[in-house]
Amino acid sequence: MSEHTMTVVGFIIGIVAFVTPIVVFVIKTLSKLNALSEKVGSLIDNSGPQKLAELINSDTFQKLTRLPPQLMDDLRNLDAITRYVESQKQQEEMRQRIHETRPYEPIMKIHEAIEGNDKLLRRFNENSGAKAFLKSYLTDTQLVQEVLANEDSIFIESGSTLSYAAIAFVQHVKETRPDRPLKICTNNIIVYIYCLFQEHIHAVLLPGSSTNSYGATFGDPLDPNSCNRHAVRSFLVEHEVTTLFTTSSVLDAVYGPHVSSGANRDIKSVLSEYADEHRCLNIHIVASEKVNTAIAEGKAHEECKLTFDERGSAVGNTVRLNEVSALWREFLAKPHNCLLIGSDNRKVTKDAVRILQQHHPGLQPILSKQSSGLIALLRPAGIRRRGKPGDQAAINFRQQ
Image (cartoon, rainbow, N blue to C red):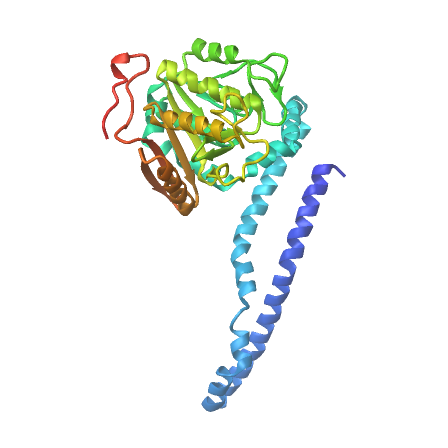
């Protein structure tokens, strides 16, 4: 018996084990109700209204006609379970077809390798609700719509949040500009593989060896954990990137973005410098759950590496932290930089906006309520968007 067949059999056994007690309970209840109905019918036939009233008001009758709350919840979930079983069946059939078709074996192996990378999967699963929400509604924000409508070359940084976002970007491009391809440059291997097989997208991967933990390249041909700053800058210039989509592991309201590797910190530094030099829009996207003040509270992760910490020794050093905080405030004051945060939990986003505005009063949020969640775009007050890149006369920032 194949591994896939065993998986399906085990899944079916689990569903049967879950549904069987419900079915047994329903059968028993229907049997009791049937007996009760016969008794009621007999009372009616014998003209016994008083006895009928007593029966209806009895504890036994009340219990029989009121299902336990847990069972009601289970019954409500039966439809969802049925849909889930059907989707799993379809996915298993698809996997089986791929598995049995030899030319597609490499694709299956790629899928298996990704599923076996626990560290990568943990990052994708972390705050997955917020990331999925951002994917669903990012392209409803006016700024993102303008970028995808007008720009010809964008850069998407590595990170699970932006992997979700890329799916939305590709779909939006297909629907809104099918006659004009968009070049998506990236150091995110997951994004690159996805975009590589999409119509209307020209995908370009930053050359370099890759980390197997994060699926990212940093421009160094030999060392996957080292960022070649010159190679990254040359790549952006060569492909005439005009908008950057960046992200971070955590966004500290006081000291800015931070990540867990030196290469990741260094590439963010290069991206920020490139945005300054070319007056390039830099949209920093994070889940609202990632906004905090952990460093000031002494709760920073031991691997924390601040993007604006050039020497890598700021955490725990008051003087250096003050320098980093100043660079972060300078970053937020520049009109081509902005923050875009969101979550399927509105309260979390509102709290994140409040924390950011508390430390940076000059930031003006534009809120977009969607479903049960909330997206917030934060930029210097009065700034709406910029003109086409490279035109110094504009950087024509239009007033709100």
